[in-house]
Length: 226
Ligand code: SF4
Ligand code: FES
Image 1: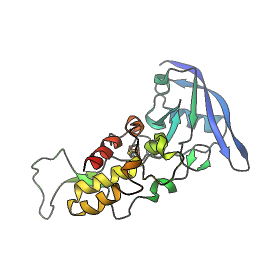
Image 2: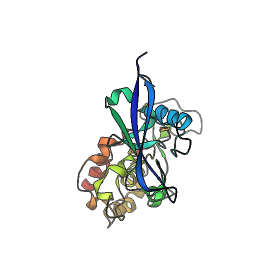
Image 3: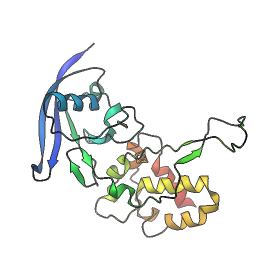
């Protein structure tokens, strides 16, 4: 298996401790199978156990490990370090979020405009005409969005104004509208309100970074057409 030494530049900020924000550099040996999250865990174990980062599933399901890697929002757990093909790997926290410490951001702004009554399910596309058990009206699955907040970080319109719902919320509105047509009027009213789709300037940055095929820009365009 191939291996080499690689430099990592990680943006650090711990209020009162590593303050102001600054990059810390680490060199570690990596192999061709390692992900960026593997590398960060190795740095934590061998070089600096004060490094703060977040992860859970290690397989692109929980959305907690999103960061800006070499300038692009990505999930650390599925980004292969070798495939980045750079001399230095730069890792920064998501933009447009308050930082708790280092790579861990506060998710309060992300969830602020989500409605607790929206569900997280959608009709399963893989089970057409299924044989359903008694009292089991349809097959459902979790919707695509893993709430990683990459789209909110990448969207230039989230930068200087915190009124825009943003791509994740508008995608959730569109999902809710499709799954619950009876709520359509109210949802479309929200989508076209002061915080809604009119603030999207069609950068398409959200769809470019979304790791989970939500295609938020497409969801916003669907709302806009309606
Ligand atoms: S829409 Fe995509 S990028 Fe945005 S939070 Fe959901 S999974 Fe992440
Ligand atoms: S650790 Fe769960 S998405 Fe990366």
